[in-house]
Length: 305
Image (cartoon, rainbow, N blue to C red; front, side, top):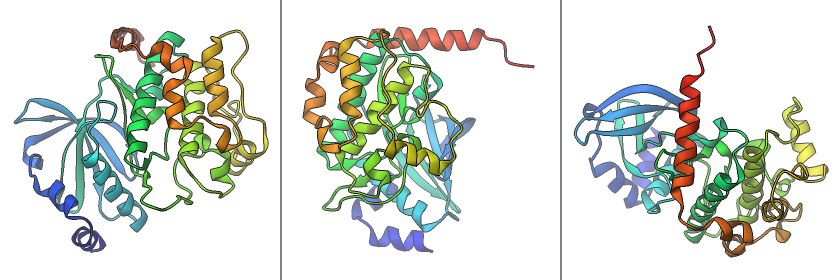
């Protein structure tokens, strides 16, 4: 099959990932389904030998060539990354006609299920996300699918990026392809122009605008995909509602969402932005308490009949 062929052809590194054998099907007990995405299903699972809870993404191999490439890309990136702001990777294995990727389980889930995150919490989350992106960029990796559902939190107050299926290693290419989630795409990307780090910055801005407010851009209209893309290209950038947020936060979002890529902050400017500096205090407890409280509230709401 293409897959085994591409494995032979691809880096020795990848063979090493699969051969390190720390993970195998026998040791894994699958529990709940956490979600679906990128051609696979993500399960919460228990690893018998270590006693760890994991998130395991199981991908059937009868998928398209395009998805197979994405998995290879994701595997290489997960293996390469060593940062406390990127989801931890434990290993991968083949079973019959599927591949399983084992990663750290984040008990707070992804940010897309939280709305109207208070600014003092959002600030600490933003610091972690900016650090995670800066780390990826330093490895010449574009995330290309920055959005709230790819930002994970846990009850220890940690925040990590995940889902690198469509990330591109910028070896010496400028990514021109149409992958990722439309609503978070930068205007230049939709127009088919060059995709660069600045396009990740746009997606960062729109993601934080969304989780800081209740507003989905573009204004929750049930737009058709093409209308949505048109809207991002043609309309003015969305702005935060007046009077609800601090000046530094408004400035941060406004800068990230400049229509011209070159006008958006470069990675090093993001870390120096007053909003990020203000909350770069290592205070994980703020996020931890908030995540715990939100999970508690969610548990106490009775399920609909």
